[in-house]
Amino acid sequence: MVFRSLFFIFIYIPFMLVVIPSQAVIVALRLPFWQVLPRAFHRVGCIFLGLKVTVIGQPATGRPTLLVSNHISWTDIIAIGSVANVTFVAKREVGQWPFVGFMANLQKTIYVDRTKRSDAGRTSREMGSHMAAGNAVLLFAEGQSDIGTHVLPFRSALIGAAQHAMEEAGAGDVLIQPLTVAYTKLQGLPVSRNERSLIAWIKSKSVKQNIREILTGGTKEVTVAFGAPMPLTQGTNRKAVSKTAENEVRHMLVALNRGLPLPVKA
Image 1 (cartoon, rainbow, N blue to C red):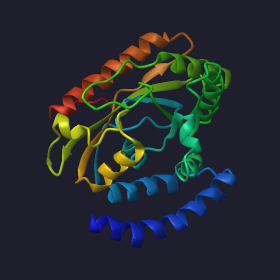
Image 2 (cartoon, rainbow, N blue to C red):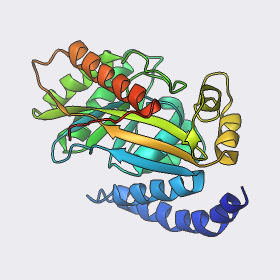
Image 3 (cartoon, rainbow, N blue to C red):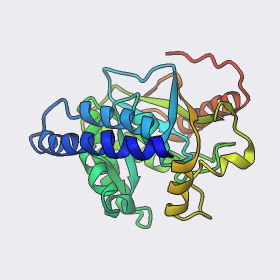
Image 4 (cartoon, rainbow, N blue to C red):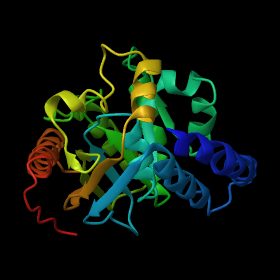
């Protein structure tokens, strides 16, 4: 905890004082290299939070890509953001949180209001437009975070809406890529089921409690595994491709939690 306090005061704060205004200017001017500083910010964040990230596979590049992932903790964003250039889809409330919302806006986060069915159309249009420009968007497809031992059913509605929006935006050659986040070790030892509650952001915890447990916990080894990209075309059945992605994420999560080898096609 002493190391983190010193790191925060002497490294993280000075780093943010430089990065935040620089990124604000980059975003305001719509410069093409807007993803560089967020990637650096997340990498420094991993050091501060004690996240040791291992990558399996690689994100698809050069084509519009929709990444669909399981979700365990808010630290997933830091881990993924440190190894891939992506724009996240988050619930509307995140954009209203002090400081967090501001930082999310600097990474061009796309917000969705889950209380309004009509908002899915606006969200999907933003996703489609972003991907049509050749960027990658990441959707936590379960719709909520979970303890990290299993994968909840993926919600295919937003994937289907994004598929339609991408077609309207002119992105005909789109990929959907499964992504798995797995917290495998805590202080060098395999994470037990009870210890997973010290990492996961579950409904029974307040934000303050979860942040306190993350900051006071030891080094957390997290694996970010990219599955095989699949084409998402006009004729693709959204429910079928969502189920295929869900099954692959589940397969990878189980294997990673059990320490089994994981062959992943790039």
